[in-house]
Length: 75
Image (cartoon, rainbow, N blue to C red; front, side):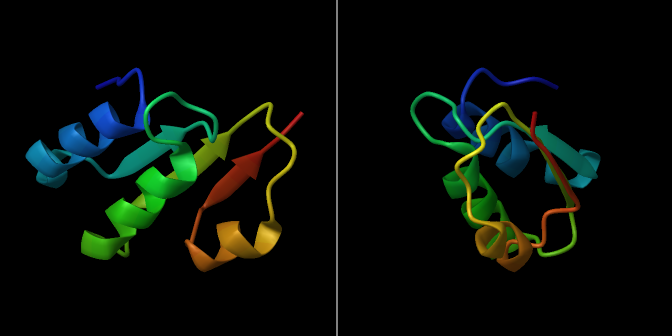
């Protein structure tokens, strides 16, 4: 499944939660950014694997660790 923004991805997650075991996301997305999307997903699922692949370098490592992100790849 793919989504073009964080809000769409969050809706797909809510509808297909049992089918999703890994999420690969960016941080900078329209409508809802990746960090907000991850925060909302973590409210209902603490165990799903999340990887961030991003060209965005201005992010705090503490936030990524707190959100239990499995992988963060920046340029």
